[in-house]
Length: 249
Image 1: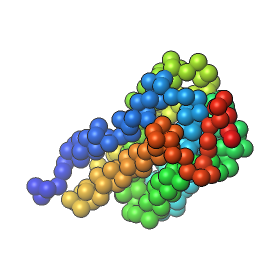
Image 2 (image 1 turned 45 degrees about the horizontal axis):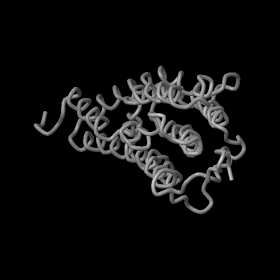
Image 3 (image 1 turned 90 degrees about the horizontal axis):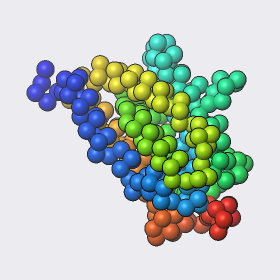
Image 4 (image 1 turned 45 degrees about the vertical axis):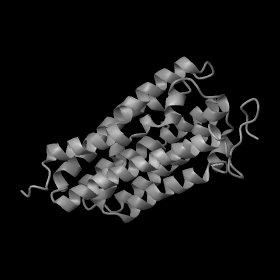
């Protein structure tokens, strides 16, 4: 093995180091959200914009499934579609996120229209979908590895939001409970695949860069929220603007 090629264990350590440095739980907007420091309208803006990300995830996954080379891989990845879209009987993550948006006071039809989302949100999420569609299968799978870090942020979010905002209940945050088991399951599968398939220095660097890119996608969405709704509150034309009572206007 070349001195520049990482062992599978070293590759995993390098991936985890990226999360420790770049995952969006470190962003100032999330610090405010989890610390109970945001106004209702700012939380609504977060829920509204995050919906677009949730809505596009199964589209991203479907495009990847179409390129997976084996039935075994396609079957394994298919569970992600059910997690987000539901199975026709039980609701999936998208439906639960709409309940969250309604729980913080947003109109469901307005959220589903995506008319009020920030341009930054649309550009960042669409860039992620295009990345998964256009890059190698190895890079596409590696970009999902932010799920390695999501259980920590979910625990922080649920605890902080329940403590900090009296209008938020356990039912409002029901989206997150299934993710505590779904995300580790998915991350374990993707990590095992990446560790087995990234055998050359170039492949390993592509994997690391894919995770850096995905962390950037998540970070950019929060940059947009912070600039529009926290400081300096430069809301782009046509984007959601909280009213004095936290309602749409």
